[in-house]
Length: 110
Image (cartoon, rainbow, N blue to C red; front, side, top):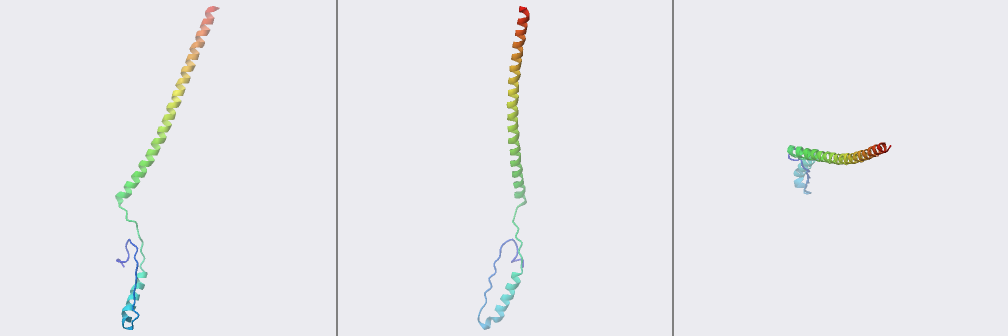
């Protein structure tokens, strides 16, 4: 049984003789083939524990890279928003300064 089982597919070919003087040997061969057909293999993929850990780590690295890329995109978007806010702030300050100068100028002319 151990030699037929294991982690591989096994094919059993039983050959028998039609001659009557080989009757006992043919019968023994058929009984052996019958017993062999009852053997059930449960094949398992041979995996090295280190390879499994390496594969898990590679998957984790890929997930972390994707997260990092998303954060980089979000950071770039925030930088753009901050630049736009700074530009808007400068425009408002300039408009405020010019309005203040106009008001002061109008107050002096009165």
